[in-house]
Length: 141
Image 1: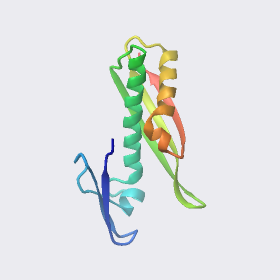
Image 2: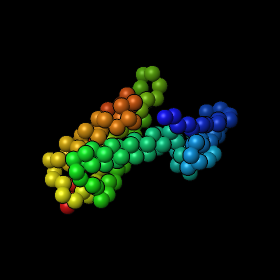
Image 3: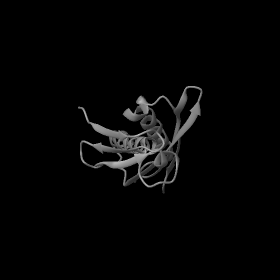
């Protein structure tokens, strides 16, 4: 399976503008630029998109792991906080922190924690990142 996304950039780094699009059409020429990445201008940025991808990937992986254990989540809410730091080699994504709140009928805390840890390590987006991945996972009762 292959999925595609594209970006178009025009101009220099600080005053230039770009757009990102996805094969599915979920994003069509969504604007991004220096000010949407490092300032408060409306638009998206690579770190935000990576966070959305990681949160979605983790949530699906957790649902799958729970399903294999005979549990069906009523709801999984995952937020991914992506950290972009200036390092010796320029800017790097150094960390992602997942904040998870899940409602899973019939699940106990231990089973949930084990499933969440397995999903954190095993989701494809986690595997591709060269960043420290941490997590706070809470089972809603």
